[in-house]
Length: 449
Image (cartoon, rainbow, N blue to C red; front, side, top):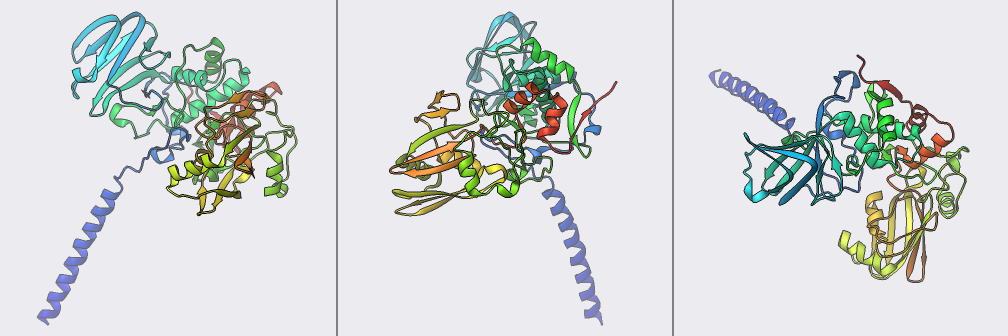
């Protein structure tokens, strides 16, 4: 009997201890930061970093300052920085201040605990990085990799900078307004982004988030932002992931390219005449990308493009990216497409081996057109692109080269910026443009006085 009681006590103690351990483990597991980096060429979804996208829970932040990391082609660490302005720049290091039209800062002179800020009554240029001019103030952080620059700016001024960077100022007013609403929605979705929290920043200035940086913000851009102040896009009461891209091929793709469910991102035809989904087979797209069907964007530069790439260059790129030697290429085939025609799976068969390439980004990188004439819809030639403009393509192997027929520029999911401009020319207002590209959404006033 005593042994039986002892066993019961031991088993009970084990269960209690295990329960505490399990609870502790789960609690610690939830603390893990699942945020991740994506190459700059991929427009970032960043849903992993969003704490709450319920727009009703946001206070008015249009007059609040947000932090944006300033980079140089994606590099955010600097050994030295040169600031200049037409008015004196006030530099404060801890409690010491000085003023000058030009400020030079070197990483070797700064301690990691130093609090550094700069401000001016005029726009500030970071002359050793770019020709761009910035409003707001700057904060500098010292890290083991170098200096980090944070532009602290009011939200609506930042959105104006994004619109000026993302869309030509010559575009129609309603297109600029649609872009402003998309940019604002994207910004508020990232208010709680944890990736740059060590720098009190929510995003960087690359296309991983939103392009930001311009020499001048035109008055019509400021007007478009002002006319849409506080307006965001929602679906079922939640801020949407308002993805956008440059140019469509006449169609967009859906959310499935992101491996994240966003039902408001559906594949649509960006044309007056809609095409039945049942007719969109592989043969259909092969012909579609080799011709110029009627569409809103059929006169835009990237609506159609073509490039010929030597097979050896593709072989070299496959080895560089995948570490696989395929040998002499015998065939390149499209095995699977996403909705709207973008390539999901590409198979390259050589005399040594065969390789399957998955995902639009990888496919666009492997079929790299750098150094070869990529002929645009208007006859212009590009020869320095590090990846295909899009994955909306058809391919033909001919002798020792591959001919690629393509359409559009960007990932193809969400709002086409050139498409938005063409819709505006056809009488669409900003809200109509947004509801055209995003399904079952609403334009809501995020904050009311």
